[in-house]
View 1 (cartoon, rainbow, N blue to C red):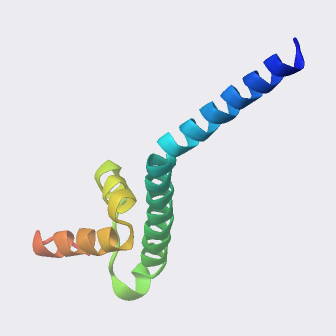
View 2 (view 1 turned 180 degrees about the vertical axis):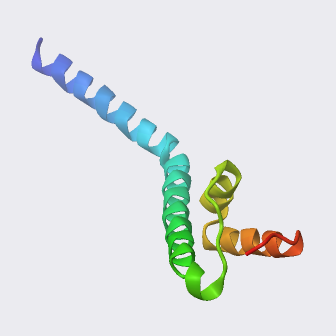
Length: 91
């Protein structure tokens, strides 16, 4: 492979790498934000379950709760507690 061919191949690969990064920039940001919200939400759920003996509040971890917390984060935890309170769930 000659020098010109190597440079052309390098430029094409660089162009493709930049195009892929720009294409996936927004979905990657959204995914990282969702992971951050999930971590904060599950941290809040863990803290809530640690204080169950004192507050009487608890939430089970099921698919619906997990999806709500993953999408909304800590406000999702508040929403789940509010829904449990409105629907007359036992604490």
